[in-house]
Length: 252
Ligand SMILES: O=C(CO)[C@H](O)[C@H](O)COP(=O)(O)O
Picture 1: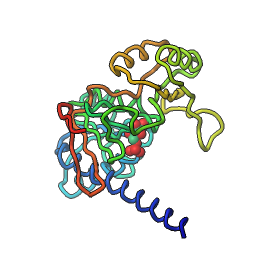
Picture 2: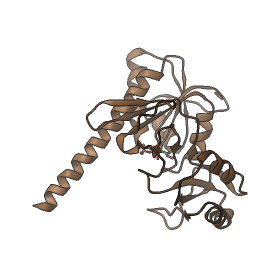
Picture 3: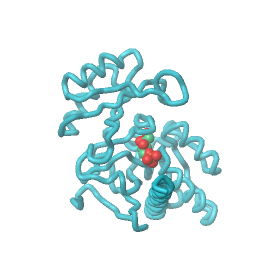
Picture 4: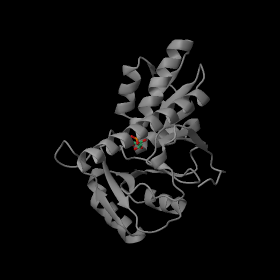
């Protein structure tokens, strides 16, 4: 009986999370995408709902929208939904990029890269006039590390993963572990052919300083710290509402 109840509770929690992702993603598309826009398409499970809404909107309102993907997954999503696929060669300036996050603090500093797509996500976000984050209530925190316990993802050139991991641990504490694949022997290999280190930090940091210093370590391609990039975040809440947050707000 106990097991059945906890199973039901797990299913209920999962359904609430999916509903929250969906409502956040749909609200962001409603508010930020217009006909003629070039839109950056993020990666992960929340963005799937944004692409679904985008596709509905394009069909029902006969809009011309161009989509720039941040990963192989995003590219597939764009194609599967019959949206127009482009790239940064043809569209280096985007009107808006919509993406998920693993954690978002009260200043909208994000940890991204739980899905390993952080480098292309950061490049595309940096090319957009507006970077909009969509997430469920579990991702919202006042300080990074409160919710997301898997660390900051850092993409590294494969031959450098050991020295980079040692340097990060020595300079900033914590551990930087090579992310291992689940249905493949060996490490996760990113869309760019690199490895991911998950840096589990063990203290508070000035993220701007740490991000700059980690980025300067030879072999580091990019970090999953997105600082000063997000203009607005949409959080799907447990009660079905959508909360928004901007960098100036201190709601947490
Ligand atoms: O950064 C990402 C992938 O690299 C994702 O946006 C992040 O992991 C959130 O994913 P999800 O929407 O599945 O929770």
